[in-house]
Amino acid sequence: MSLIETHDLRRVYELDSGRVVALDHASLSIEKSDFIAVMGPSGSGKSTFMNLIGCLDKPTSGHYRLAGTAVESLDANGLARLRNREIGFVFQQFNLLPRIDALSNVELPMIYAGFDKKTRRDRALHALGRVGLAERAHHRPMQLSGGQQQRVAIARALVNSPSLLLADEPTGALDSRTAIEILALFQELNREGVTIVLVTHDADVGRHARRLIRFKDGKILDDHRQTPLDARDLLSAEVAA
Ligand code: ADP
Ligand code: MG
Image (cartoon, rainbow, N blue to C red):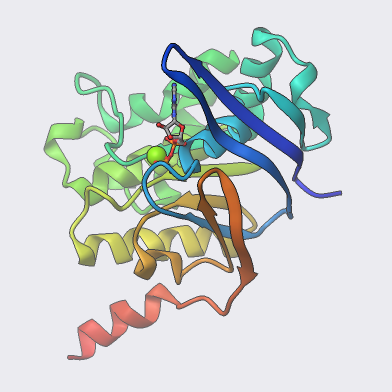
């Protein structure tokens, strides 16, 4: 069974000025432990697609199964529960709470999931360790670099052990060297079995995925597997130079 299966997924926005077909009959499967880049020009339907597979929105028509659950049959509560259990989100602007430290930011999704304080601490520390930031647990976002803030956001996304990591332009706010470090982290997590779907407009970022899906005018224009660049090679080449 695939982790994600969509069949004729369609999302239409009804506006006073007319209808916008944001996503048009998108059918695809995504396997566990794959690393997908979603590309396409502005307005091509990438965010609409991500919102649907992220259970933040419901399709106008079509079917979507996530980890075996028929998503279109769920109410808002069911959607929220599935989202909390199965999906971790990473955003361009990190979206960390500024007044609490890294550890408390990473603990947040577990508060909603109902874990006790000790378990939350232990698991948040472990997640920060996974992204190489155990020593920065008590820094607030302002006391961290952009790359470190994105690592905290990735730790937060991982802390409930989701089956899927969804990242919308996760390197968009970072300089190119830091972007490569974050891609190296995504690739490491992917080798450990984390399924990643990453939206980017940057072809260089897209080359690090195992599979590239391109959207145009709400439709899947192209979908192929590729041999990914290894971000570690770029980092070590830089050290050697
Ligand atoms: P992308 O992320 O690739 O830039 P989007 O998925 O955001 O594209 O948008 C796809 C199309 O749907 C665009 O034409 C956009 O204007 C339209 N759209 C997106 N969100 C809404 C909305 N909430 N209401 C109306 N139209 C929308
Ligand atoms: Mg978008």
